Image (cartoon, rainbow, N blue to C red; front, top):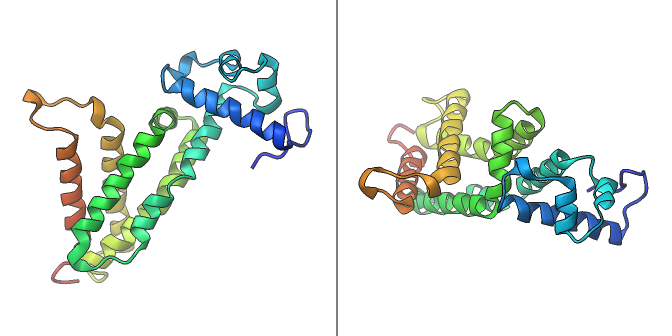
Length: 212
């Protein structure tokens, strides 16, 4: 929680509301335009504020995008809850489907800023990569625990379970990020087919094996 503005003054209720208006305005803008076209004055104008007000709360547009990325990273509670609740072996597919559905719902909600975060992180901007990793690691860790428990702790090391979880998470994230724009030959597959396939694969990994 930011407590002081760029002039070193404490941010009260009104200041917090103004700062939030700038963040909301920026989020609305990146939903309809490229982040490269985003400007401080454009954000202020969209928030019905004077341009100089922007610089009371943010150094530049990149700082706004970082704050939006961090805010999205804090909204993974539903995903974690799906992995934290008890799963009965016979209900593995049901829970896997709920997790995949929650993952897509999360991406649909935060798609604009998550795409920017990932693009900048992949492009070498460490601050965005750190936010992405911090958001993903708790989910990947829980997936790894479930994979190792299902496959058998005597047959699968922590390292291998974590590696598999990284692959699964990355694949689901990639499809959630791009499914709306992916086109297949003869339109034989749609997003529901992809979600169902991801659920099937996750179910196989998380279902107890005979040797577990």
